[in-house]
Image (cartoon, rainbow, N blue to C red; front, side, top):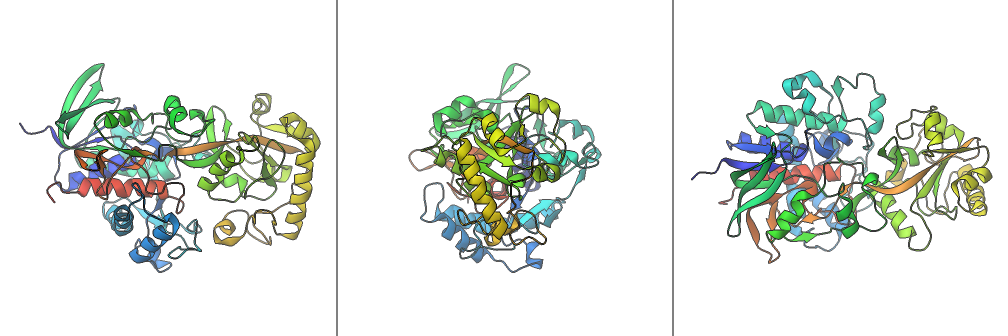
Length: 517
């Protein structure tokens, strides 16, 4: 008997929707099942940036090539591993530019994003001009009957400050726009989409995956398929799995990702013999908590007039560091000094000019102060006392840091130096775009946690996104991408947009792979 579908995609984030569109354009019948009542996944609450080396849009600004991309990945990632194999690196470098062109040809508009260099532009193949693309805004009405079924972008994600932009209720931007464009393309091209439909089992004949069991309206329905693609995200919203695999302490409330990412498919695939890798890793990112959400501090910590300190009142890393390195720094520091949470300390110039979490610049709700989400004090001494951190340590750190800021050079951590670090901060007449004294009262502070934009560990896949078994062989019929798969970039990140870029590349490879090839 013929299967119900050629491809069943589990997960309606950008990766799952892209795979559905790509497979449908090749003539396949496609069903997308989503456990949540909304489509869009973590993409919708992200900045929506895509790291796609050698793409045709960046080529207009600076030269790049597949060879340069491969060279950079090898230099950054070092020796190959099971998850970061030579074949997967080559597939990414080879496919990224092809995917960028395919997206634009599929009416998903993209544009080059200036000012976002690779995280290590000093390495061979690294690019100081960057390789990041983003989509254009999308009017929600374009989605028609599906408009209400797309996850809204405002909230705790890295692009959360977009909630302050005019027209946000009717116009989608950043990750929400990317997910919206792909949702529109999927539904317009005959992809079937089931929301509120979690997968509760895998169907198999021997070692071959032949479909899924979907729970709809409290009833379980077997759905057969030639191929099954797991695009269901990681396990960042599952507190139990976090405590089992991630460094401690850990809290699902520290993640900026979608609350529906509970890793429900991970154990199902493991039970079917799938191998895993990197389950102790994540896309780390320093966050604060406010109004019930985690908020990235990426756009905040690199600005002048702020520092991050531990419980001893000491700085311990470069506040301009890329998100992944900055998030890891909190755990590394905690081996000797309590640094979870750490504290972002800022003076009044920072608070008056830079948005912080859900709060616009210069606006701090009384309820936030009453709830302890942010602390305000007339002096650094009083601030340290209110936070319960070492007063002498904080005062000493501020004297030292303010001396560096006055000279425009951080002798401890080289904050604001180099191409990547110089791309952050506040540009203009400053000798160093990220350095500014913390000395204007009142002073403010928020707790900083080692949050994440998703977990990195997952199912081991090959260069075609096929899931591998514990015996090293392909699990026939089963594919994975994005947060459901073990990351190509264990322990590091090549550039802004790498997580989403990799997810889409892996989804594209899965959708276009010929099983008989």
